[in-house]
Length: 232
Image (cartoon, rainbow, N blue to C red; front, side, top):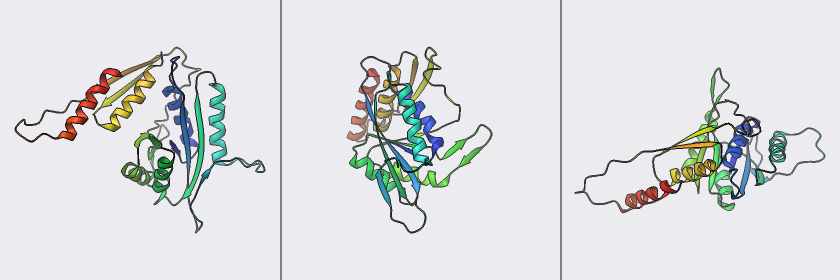
């Protein structure tokens, strides 16, 4: 599930979708839930609903333009990208917006929530949005699934059509644990692309004092980490 606040967040998301979808012939399709986050002003009630374009509205809204951008991307990559898109809109105060994000993730049985980084870059200066930062902190604390933060450095990554035979390099720093194993699974999916080179840097923890009692949970996590690495 990808959360977007505005139209600036759609381009890096599409770049990630494109690179995450493998060109491998046996690659499976995946489902993307797009959640447009809007701040509630005034005394209106919180709203969470499926997106439906208003045919009577001649002036497209922000979410209309976001969905249209995705549809254009989908048409241009119809032979390579197989994604089911569901779009939702939530209007809520930023202080409680994380509740709606977590609720939708729960009922949709989402495995990964993607939220935009709270800092934006335009090449010359950096802008910090403290409302986004607070939301990300709360989502990380209360999400019923894994959470990833998408950092856009405004490098304007080219599309597949422009990089059909250009090798792109991806690095994964693996610290261990369930969140890193999920990141490893996503990176491994990317590596199925013929023009993706994946480098994994695994950090190993120092073995504890053998005289101390063993931590069964840590031992199980370490076994899962060791099992995940060879199959990436």
